[in-house]
Length: 358
Image (cartoon, rainbow, N blue to C red; front, side, top):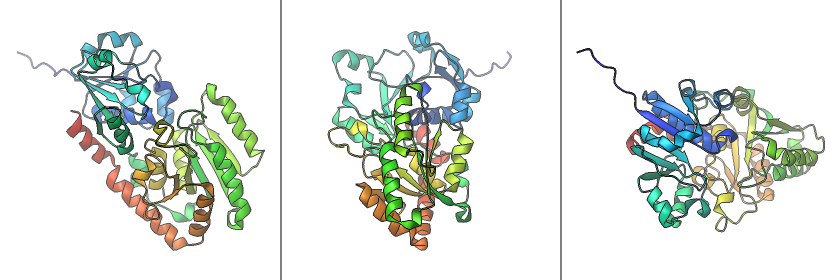
């Protein structure tokens, strides 16, 4: 008998938010990348081939070999060995051999435990990306496995060149005013206040980069109005990955405001659930300043690998303090680089996927 070629393990993935290409999409594709490396067949369930758009935003190898299948494929999930679903609160029966729900947002409305949903979810396992989200899922009665994401090896392995750094404060996050908004509006005000309070920042630029969708154009226009044609406030919507990595490399500081003015105990869905862009900036030698809520509190030890703040006055005071102390700044940046290397490499992530999901 002729040797028959082993049948490939088939993976299906459905994300109803796929075209937003945000942090949740980055996470689920990182899992697909590991499975593609294991030579599994990756099938993305979406009516349009988005491979071009995905490759502009992310650096996942799996996109080159993935297939795009129509939404009607959701009726025949039994053809898959593994099925991954990013939930929007709706659930469906799956005949796949192993099924996973990625719980991205700690919003109780998305995890209704009525009888019908319990039946639908009987053969699903929940996964999430942070201890913060897991804590809230526990409160909602949902058991989950935490698998933290990884960073691109290009960022992990690059050396920090302090001589190349420019007078830039960078923030990276989608431009939108609802849900867990990145609060670029408050950053603009804080940046202006910082420049008024300290001459050391007179020549600094604030660069706001991130994804922009048509439905968020009104908010984006409001931000530009707030900037009032200030040439030191620069907007970079929908930039390609190579330009983003260059901005990380050149920037001295990184700001993250998600969750500002939100009661975390009442509305956990409105704070940062994890915070991948601060880690990318940390890997690139930026000094990180994050609002003290949600996921960033798990990642940042104040004064060791970055800074946390609870209001903009505190942020400004810490910025002025550390900017005048080069040795402290370099020590914290180097600590941050070591932290991401040890905890967010592809190898660490792949081992966790193999141990927990396969």
